[in-house]
Image (cartoon, rainbow over all chains, first blue to last red; front, top):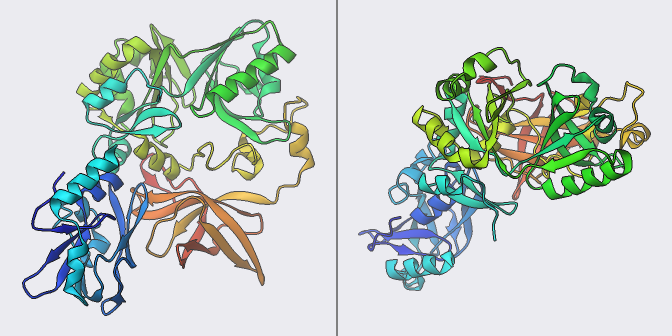
Length: 129
Length: 363
């Protein structure tokens, strides 16, 4: 399982990447895709939708179960990865390149409330036991 | 402490993702459930189904006992080796379990029951034996393992690895079985594909599994087993039926013999109660995934009807979501219904199932 150090993480298993232009890119973690198994359906938010932090905004469904995706930060949806609608298996192939949506954050300080790679790894270890 | 089949270590050696399945530590998949599904539809896959329980019933007049015990009619079993699918009912006609009965001889029948119900079934059968036929000898066979080899090439692969198997089994028709050395080989399964279910001594299971693997049979987990059986329109006990539902509302009227004079447990309740529901197939027209327990709403002739999905999922062969649902009898094939998925209503079409058989899409 891969937990890159340049990303931030949530307890609900999303990853967040801060881009140079101040926007953020969001996906589900490698751990989440491993747990869910083969992905078969993704529902993405509308571009332009304003999200609160931790708001339910997307769904990732595998052969096994449906998982809600929560927005790690407050902000406006500025892009969605609609390739995933026809090829949800890309999440299994590489969870970190198969992003779900991009946000223009309302408060970049929301980032401070997220986990770094080490804390996320620690969380997963705890969940194992 | 989870129960383990004789193949537990073998699964772990093959990097299986293990899950707790009704108290059994079982493989969910060995990497990709979808790949395993496709391998069974196109070539050959194998499942460890040793958590299921063979029960041997021996003695004089086993047939008389089974005539009363199950809803299907064992008098259909005339040729040794022939198998019969049936429900075992409560006096109220609820389904205690669905099972396969193999007729080996007039003094030896073998039934195979589900894992989750095995203890309950054994207790029920022993109690009925004591009432009806105390002289019968009933033996649960936890000393045996069971491996299902399924797919268009499954039989040929088994013939490669068991000496003499081709000669012994190539004339078997569907739902027939034979005994060859330590192997009990039946042309049955739970995938909608050709293949065998093979019962063998527990200690022989790991080497048999490994030999099949070397011959190109892909290991497949419970995940693929579930999507394959759903496409094949085969019921899962505990989901599509249980002790609160009768076979007549579970798509299993064809397994109930109400024509003969024979009395069996649950018969009177079946005759007394009108059938107001049915099990149907659904194919989702919108994007999304149908899951068990989702509510179904149907409008027909200015009336609203409600039902529930009993098994739902994504069909890898059709590339759409499909389901089995219990709906009021007024709804018919071709109707469109709404399914409540989270906060949305998704459109689905009522179809006749099975959805897939022998690699072909039927809907």
